[in-house]
Length: 204
Image (cartoon, rainbow, N blue to C red; front, side):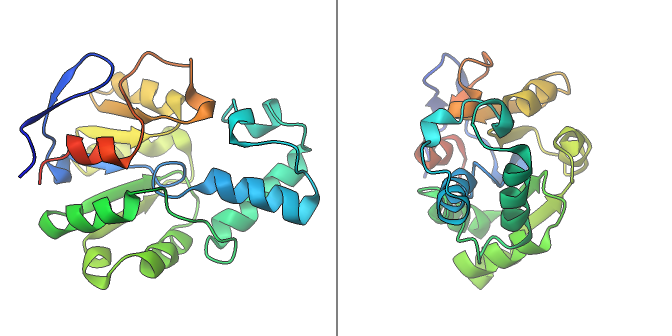
């Protein structure tokens, strides 16, 4: 069994969260989309002089010396076909999702405009049993997650976009910022560094 509480690195003590009460973003939390972007930028377009640590802004055009149209082209490829573009899972994500889905429905709410590429990706990486117990909602807009989080009766949400997490605070939803270079020093919210910390948060 999980411990009944988990002390976050920041300050708060959070009771173990039921799986059905917490939702997850997809890109940057479950899927390592940034790594795929970095690889494609180099292999397909010749932009090879940057690393993950250089992505200090969610809007990549504001921190990388790459034309906006190239950034958009790469992300379009990733969002429409995450398998061909070889988007890999974040370390530990698959194991946790498999475990969580054994006891409850898992809810993924993504700002992607299309949910089929997410379904295809999950079908590739997760067991059929886990896949059947995972709900995916594609909002098409970062700022439209709130109503879906409320609609699925979620009380907690994990996202790598600091601005989304700030929005959730005002909607009586407890956010956890999944630590990435682009959200550092942009908030004072509770954070999770990896899926080991997420696993410790969630009751099982």
